[in-house]
Figure (cartoon, rainbow, N blue to C red):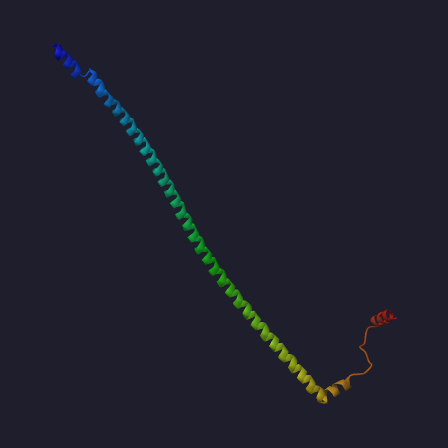
Length: 157
């Protein structure tokens, strides 16, 4: 039994061999902590990627919102420009019509002036103007009231 006791001791779990086997347990512990570290590292990386993805989606949402606003602004500017252009065209038509009326008025007044000048020259060439001038009394002035005539005479002295 003696040899079997030694053998049992050698083969038993509480023997030297067990201590030797325990060193692989330390290796397992080391492997376990390394695995935990790598798991934690992967979780941190995943969290960062998720956070980055969230920020990118927010950024993309903001970008799309700004793009929509800019498109609305461009359309609004186009509408305003179209409205202003139509208003200015209408105003231009009104001004052109007014200008045309003024040109017609000037032509008409010029033609009337020329007609009057021609009729005066015809009248001057005929004897009618001479007869009209002969009927006027030379040297005679318009009659005035006596008080008014005295006031004018006093003012002229």
